[in-house]
Image (cartoon, rainbow, N blue to C red; front, side):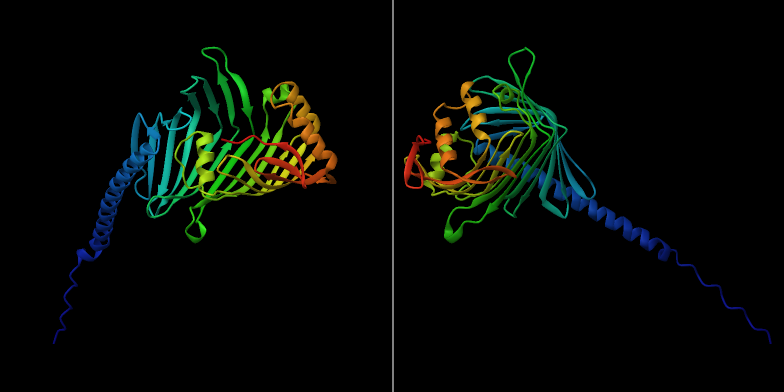
Length: 353
């Protein structure tokens, strides 16, 4: 009796092909999802541009493209232009801009701008140029598109004045500039405010140096501004008036300016009443600032009336440390525009609007 050999097993090619088919289906589905999300994002960009135009900020690109497949959205803008209206009117143009958002976090946008930029004051006709080695912005919004946070970093900024077709005149340069703003929800139904921080490192200005106040200058500022959710373009006086009418307050957690020869710092709280008069209190510290003010007064950068006021405050202050240097510290009050040292009036601050 012979034993028959088992029949050979039939191959199942579909087992081999199944992973490839699934991969292709996933890729096709992801591609369709990205295209749909990209169209949605493009529509949201158009809607945002329309809202900005209604608020007095008109953005445009000579050429716009949305790229970044498969895991992000990358908006490329050639020759971006921003025109502001409703306050101080400016036209700002740059060489190019690139904004990126990851597909899993589209509300967080990081943008970089290519140098240089041209800034034109459309009221006076004055033209400025600006350049940098890096200009990066990071913004975070909520589900409705309302901005919640904005961060700006500029490395090696340089601003120059361009008088017609003549050579440009340097106005300002620095090693780095940073600004950070975060929306602070208003308490008990009040309007939202802003937590703000600013720093400037290694700043130089030929105009200030010519006035006897040579750099480099370092600046650090941290403050909270309540009732500051109206971001429409408007003049400084109109913005101050609207802010004062909303009951806004500046809470100054820290402000410091240091130069090779002088230093100053301040903390406190300030507000402006309906008549534009300054109210509040500040704790101040000065070191070597009197000489700087005298030089600035001689060249017309500041009013001559400021110098004796600061001198009187310095004489009445207490010895203290200011930015690691010997100086004077004192408290001042603003009462309906009257500047007081303790209860003694020492000057008047003109209405701000």
